[in-house]
Structures are given as C-alpha cells and as structure tokens.
Length: 171
Length: 171
DNA sequence: TAAGTTTGTTTCAAACTTGAACCAAGCGGA
DNA sequence: TCCGCTTGGTTCAAGTTTGAAACAAACTTA
Image (cartoon, rainbow over all chains, first blue to last red; front, side):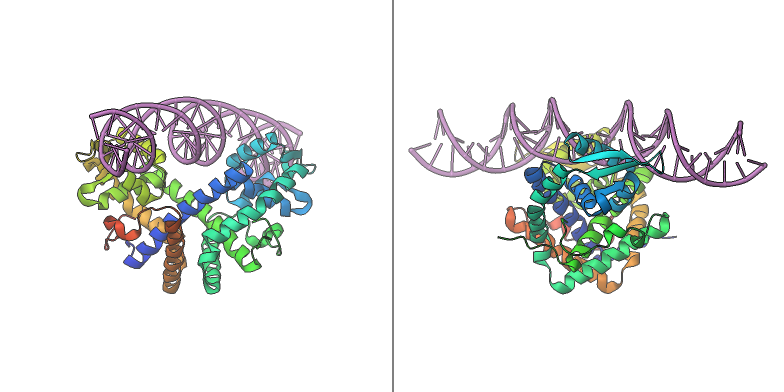
C-alpha cells in the first residue's frame, strides 16, 4: 500500500512536537542537574516512589509506571542507591523480586528539588498555555498512551493506584 | 515566594505528556533501528539535510534546527559519515565552518526508511487524534518552542527557510 | 515431580550523550 | 596591526542508555 505521507498540518504539528520534546527534556535535565545533581528521569524515580504506599515499589512496577526499560531502571537505581537516596529490599512473597524504597535522605532531596522543578515545568509549558489547552494536552496524550496499551499487555492506568492520587505532588 | 504546585488537571496533563514522550521516542527509535539501523535523531539528520538547498547545511544550523547540542551533532555526523550517508565539506566563506551534506547513499537510505517511519508516526500519534486535535497539538507546541526563543537568541522559525517547505517530506 | 516455559532482575559490551576544555578563525577597536 | 572577545567546531572523560544474554525463582503440565 502506498505511503500516507503527513499532510502539511500534520507535519507542522509533528515538527513542533519533536522540537519541543527535545527542548523541554533538555531544559528539565539541565535544571535538575544543577539543583539536584541528577537528570529528570532520576528525579521522576524519586517522585514516583514518594507517592507509593510506604514509599516502596517493585522494580517492574516502577519501570512500567515510568515507561522505561527494566535495565535502564536497574542502572538508575544503582546510582541512586550509591547516593543513598533509595534502597533495595527483597520481596518476601516473590523471591525473584526486588523492591526499591525511598530513603529519608531521598525524600529530603526530592522535597528540596521539587519547587524549582515545578517552577521550571510551569515556565516551559503551563505558563504558555490557556486552561483549555491544558485540557487538550491531557486528552491528546492520554489517547496516545492508551494507544500503547493495546499493543503490549502492560498495566492500564487503573491498575496503578499510585498514579491516581491527587493534590500536591513533586511532579 | 511559595511554590505554585501543579493543579490536578495540570498534573494529569503533565504526566500523560511525559509518559507519551518516553513511549513515542522509544517506539520511534526501535522502529528506525530495525528498519534503518539508526536511532530517530540520526534519521532526522538525514531528513533535515534532504530538504536543505543542495542537501547541505552548516553544522551549527543543523544543530539549531534539530534543537541539539553541537557536540551531539558532531558525534552523530561522524558516525553517519563512517556509514557513508553524509559527508563533510569545508565552508569556503568561513574557514572555521564545516558543512554536512547528504550523500546519494544517504538519500537512498532515507527514502527507503521514510514510509515505515511515517507509518509509525501515524500509528503512534495521528491515527489517534481528531483533525482538531492535530491543530491543537501544533498550537500548543508552537507556543512552547516560541517560549525558548526569548531565552537564548536562537534563530526563529522564519530565519530557517528549509523548515518552511511543504508537501511530501520524510518526516 | 521433572522438564520446559515464563517472569523478575541484573549484567555486560557497545553505542550514545553531556559538559567542559580546547583550538582555530573571524571580528572590533585602540 | 595587535589584542582580546566571540563564534564554529571538535575532543575527551565521565555518565547514561540499549539490547541481548545470563540467572534464578515461579509456574505449568504431563
């Protein structure tokens, strides 16, 4: 079948999106590297743990929540463990399992970094959008994420209780 | 001043966006690695060159267009050069300058990879959006990109003629 | 219950990215 | 013209990511 090339509108949207994605991730990485000595992903690991029950999460759940590979997570957690920000425990029910936990120190680092991070997110994104656009953003990317849930039988958002909380949060 | 935390709506939008960004980039990288033996960025380098006048571009312009650092570009171009997909020329007007050019082979590789890439972009994104949402996407991220143009005095979209073309294109 | 399969995690080497340092080459003014 | 500053590009080491392979524990089923 002949290729369905992108229409001019689609192309403009795609390019704006790709450019933004690069710029935003870069800016976030730089800001967090400055203020917390870690890239965005590592901060997200801390933030995700901080919202989990008992601030603990199994490696696989953490990786799925963050949409990253297990091997990438292993590396990151190893580094964070060296820094004393997370710890590892064995899972009692499943001896294969490994559980990452946020340490007190990790929590402190997270809380110290959070305001600057949120400020940056606002400056880069939300300050430039109308309230309607915030809604549109959510709808668009929720649809995109859902698209992946058919493909591989990963957990759906509803299976992941710690991603449903509301109120103040570090990201 | 006290931190302006994200509202629940903003948080949902932000998380959906971050999750999507990770999923989409990953899927794109995997698809292109499979079909063209290179990650998405490298493909984008070829695509950008293919649209430039004479399929040539100065390193700095290329880096700015793709929103990446010069050093990252240097590394990527070196690899692509080894593969015979791009070449380097000296700039005649400015002896410091280096110009990347797309080789015939590079053009062939690009053309061979483009249909699959576009198909993937559709499958991941556009097939899941309404036409209105495509417009919203463009507006949102155009605003975000513009946000960066104040900060550092980079080229604006209008200064970059090869990003204004329309019609069929490889990304 | 042994064999074979799946699942959870780590490991390893190769590839890629980062940021600072470096080297020219242009540029502006005393 | 000489000096100091900026710009274009590369280099280097340290850090990160990737994907495949390795392991071990759980599950399945004959």
